[in-house]
Image 1 (cartoon, rainbow, N blue to C red):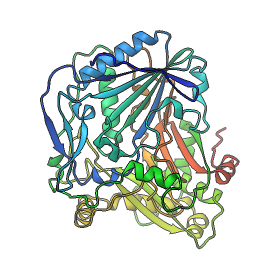
Image 2 (cartoon, rainbow, N blue to C red; image 1 turned 90 degrees about the horizontal axis):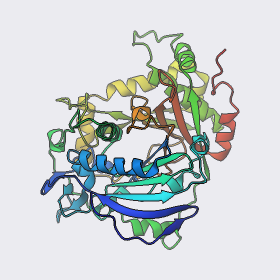
Image 3 (cartoon, rainbow, N blue to C red; image 1 turned 45 degrees about the vertical axis):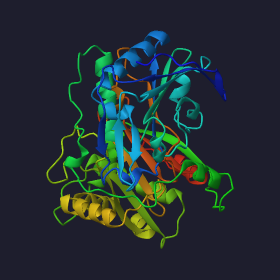
Length: 451
C-alpha cells in the first residue's frame, strides 16, 4: 500500500473529501502487458462502470484499513486493475502494469449526516452520485487515469463504497469475480480461490488499430458545454428500482409460458420472461405509434459461446450486444410469448459462428460505439441476476444496498440484480424519460401484485 498522499480538503457539494491515497499490489510484480482484444475495444467510448455498495458498521477507520490491506493482496492476482491503458504508434491499445505506477486510487470522504437507510431508496441515482467517483469520465481516459477508483464515504451508521471500473478492460462477470475475491481476502482467506485468467489473446489474437484514436474527454466536455457543434439536449431521465419478489417472478414466468410456441422450442427462461415483461410495459409507457419500431438489447456473456470456450474466470470483456427488433403494434397486440420468442431466438442464434462474424466485421472496420447506441426506442439490459452482488461480505456483513451510478444511462437502460431477499427475486434498475417513468409506475400490471 502506498503511503498516504498529502491532500487539500475538498468539498463536492455536501460530501467532504478528507484524504486520497493509492494502493498497489502488495509485492513487486515487474512489468506486465496484455493487448486489448476485439471484445474489449467497442467499449472504449463508454463511461467508467460505476457501482455503489452500502454497508452497516460503526468502525469506519478499521473498515477502511481492512479494505486497503485486502486490496493490496488481491491486486497481486488482479494487477491489471492497478495499471493504465497504453496506445502504441499503430493505434493498438493494451493494459499495462509496472511497479512504478501509482495503482488504484482510494478517496476517503465524510457524509455522517446520511444514514444507511437513507441510501436504500428506490428512486433516482442523482442523490447517490456524490458517493461514486468518475461521473461522466470516458474509458479512453484510462490512458492517463487509474483503471479503478474507489471512494469510501463514512456514513452516520456505516460505509458507502463507490467504485468506478474502466469498462474497456472488464465486464460484469470479471467485476464481480474481483469483488468476491477481494471480499474473500478481507474475510481471512489466505489467497484467491479462483485465479483470474488474464491472457486475453487466447480468445482473440488479432491486432486492431483504432484510427482515429479513442475520443478525447476534453472534446466531449467542450461539446456538452456548447463550445463545439451544438447537439440536441436529451430529455431528463428518471431512475427507479422495481423489486420483483420470487412469487412475482414466478407469476410473470408462468404467464409467459402459459401458451408455449407450437414450433417445439424450449420453455422461456426466467430472464426471457422478465425481459419481455419489461419490454412490453416500457413500450406501452412510451405511448409510441403502432408502426414505430422498438429494439430489445441484451449484453450476452460469450465465455461458453466462443470456440473453444473460455473459463468463467476469464478476466476482461467477453460480452457482445444481442439485438432484436419489431414493430410496436406487433409487440403489444400479440401475447407476451411473441416477444419472448424473439428474445429467445436472438440469444440462441448468437453462437460461436455469429460471434466470429461480429468480430471480423469489427476488425475490418472498427467502430467506436457510444453508450447510447443500443437502438431506437430500446430496452437495453446490462448486468445480470447471476452476479452475487449481495454476497460481497468483507467481514462485517452483506451490503444493505447495491446500485449503479449515473454513467452509461440512457432512456431504456436496465440493470438487473439478484434481489436482496435472495432466491429468484430480482431488482430491475430502470432509466426512462420522466413522463414514461410516471406511467410505468402507475401500471399495475407491470408492478406485479401477488396475493
